Image (cartoon, rainbow, N blue to C red; front, side, top):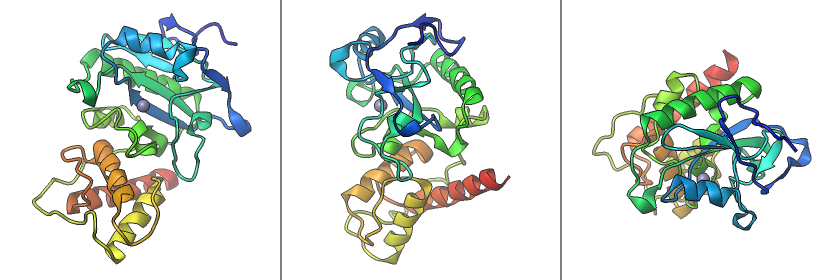
Length: 255
Ligand SMILES: [Zn+2]
């Protein structure tokens, strides 16, 4: 067991018992960002280091920008839970997880502080320097567990991280009055949307029917990539943003 942090940015080493070997020889090729969703940072850190929680993460960042490491990067931390991305269901085995303190949607969802964002940015760059993690695999917990999770949510500044070279992001198309596709709609347009989201990595079934599963995935997509309105309706702005994101990914892969 490691006895000191992998990252020189971590000033605290708070080992969590909730860790194990990564399964099936998987190595980290994803970075998953979370918010703690608890009222106090002290309470969240305490919870993640207690066996009874059954939860942990590799890194924990508080609102003052202090970074603690809880699980060695070589090991499997328990942060993603039941998740799916690009066909992989054992997200914990192939990812590094960062818990960013924010009380979240259940407690008035305050803004992330500047000190906290600076620390997250530096920590992500540091992690990316050690692991082969493609930009499009830097994701929100909500991306890999839509409907079940909302973190880190629509206030999280993905654009800022992208400017620093972390994650894939395109400027979202402006929101208009267009209501687009939504629950109950059927047909080829719905199937095309399902195929596009599935191709990007989201857990979507191609059924031609706009069901609640698709609504939750669209909402997750919006929280990350078109945060101005996360309502689960695939309006023109949402679909345009998704198309440009897919183009940006193929450009990143071939460039
Ligand atoms: Zn989470």
